[in-house]
Amino acid sequence: MKYEKKILNFKNDLENRLAELEAVNLAADECCKELVKATEKLERVKTEAKTVSEETSQTIKTQKEKVAEYKKEISDLENIAKNKHLEFLKVEESLKQQKDLTNIEITKAEKSIQ
Image 1 (cartoon, rainbow, N blue to C red):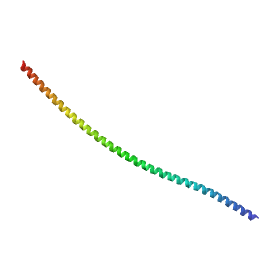
Image 2: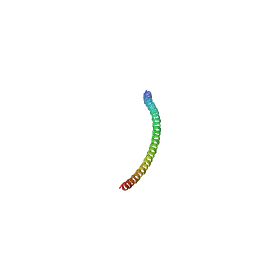
Image 3: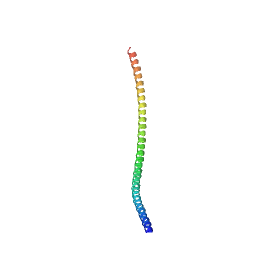
Image 4: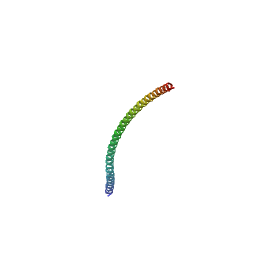
């Protein structure tokens, strides 16, 4: 009888431990499922981040190309403006010379009239 009680206690103790292990095993299974979901989500986020990064890189590259084009256009327009200004200065100088010559001719004509 004494041994039967010990065996029964030992059996109950083993059954309790088994129940605890099964509970731990279920909890571990749930953790694994959550880990798989989290890993899948992480992979989706990594893929999305890579896509966004590539799109951003392409956008930056495109914007740099546009800036280079605009700088070239500005440089071309500045050169055109400089050339037009030089032309203006030449025309202005020519007009001044013509005015001076005209004034000289007027002066000569006035003297010849007198």
